[in-house]
Structure formats: structure tokens, C-alpha cells
Length: 297
Image (cartoon, rainbow, N blue to C red; front, side):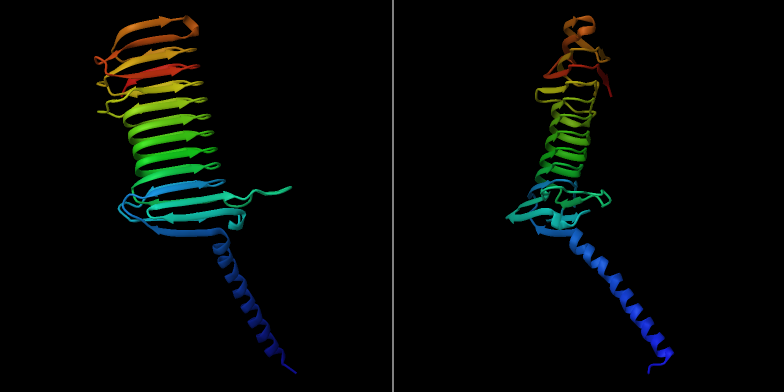
């Protein structure tokens, strides 16, 4: 019959082994069930097409590297998502979407948010979409298209041809250069950079735009808000043919304009046409419901 001392040693050893086993399991399960990553070898200017839903998307440059690295950390189990990825030459495709749920689906909202982090060569062709989640991108150049269906867009230090849409969320762009087309259906828009052509529109939200010192527009440009104030700051030496109007609001312009036309309908709106620094390319500024403020940097 075993002694009391040997039974005690056996019990302690058994407890220790069980504790070690249970300590090891969660880390392995979390990595397998919640994390995914892959590295793709590419040329100096690859093409990346990426689409996510129910997750935040973060894209940043890895400088002169020749790889695209995609890392997913999921709050839910990855089995709850449809993950598709492929590569054809220097074109990488990636999709992460939450699977549809049949019947009643109860979520306690106590899990971590899902994030997709991307590191890519600084110069690329990019088409990025997220249907429900924020989109952040920085230090990129090339042909850049970005869209979010429900979430904020925050962009910093982008260069090239920029085409951006946000269906429901604020859009912030800082230190950008090149040409820009941006539309926001419901949210504020704040843009600053050195642009040669500008097309900005927000359907419901305020619009703030600053054109960097030394910039000159080389193509017809338009800045418009359907419902919200418009605030614009431009270099004192910007040359443009201005067409400024508001359907319901006032115009406050502190730039030296050579006036061609002025029409005031009191509370129902105002319209100004004139040349700034002898004029050049057309710049149209309009708000349907809100004030327009234009000032030098």
C-alpha cells in the first residue's frame, strides 16, 4: 500500500502536469484560430487588390522592400470568415469577409476587434475596400483607390493619383500630393496637400481644404458640400478663375479677387465670379446649405 508521502508526491506531480498542459493550450489555440499571415514576393511596383468587411484595414509602406506582408488578427474565430488570397505575378488579391449567418445569431460583443495589417512596397497600384471598419494608409505612392462603406478614412503622406470614397464616416487626408478625387456621403472631410487637380464632394458634412504653399492647379477643380460649411485656405499667389456660390449661407473671402460677377439674394444665397492673381484654371466652390470661407494660408 503506498505511503501517505508517496501519494502526496504523486498528487503534486499530477497537478503540475495538468497545469502545464492547460497553460500551453490557449496560446496555441489562439494562434491557430485567430491569427493568419503571409508574405508575397513582388517586384518594385506591385498591384494589391484587397477587400475586407467587419474589420479595420491598416496599410503602410515598408520602404524599398520587395514583399507584401498581410497579417490578420481576428476577434472571432477565423472560421467565421471567408478568407481568399491569391497571387498572379506581381498582382496580389486578398479578401476577408465575415460569413453570413443563418437564422438567429447572438453576439455578446465581448471579443476583440478584427484588424488586417498590410506592409507593402512604397510605390504600388492599390485598390482597397472595407465595407464595415476604419481604413488607414500612410507613406504610399502610385495609383491609389480607397473605399470604406461604414468607417472613417485616415490617410497620411500619400502621393500620386488618389481616388477616395466614404459612404458613412469622416475622411481625413494629410500631407498628400498629386491629384485627388474624394467623395463622402455622410461625414466630414478634411484635406490638405499639394495638389494639381482637386475634386471634393461631401453630401452631408463639413469640408475643410488647405492647398499647400507653392501649389498651383493645372486642371479644372471643384470643391462642394451639399449640406455643410466649406472652409478653404490657399497660397496667396494661387492663380485661378474662381466661381463661388452658396444656396443658403454667406460667402466670406479675404483673397484679392478681381470681380467679374456678384449676385446676392439675401438669405437665399450668394454668387461670386472673379480672377485670383490674373486667373488661370477654373476653381468652383459651392455649398447648398452652409457658409463658404476662403482665406490665404
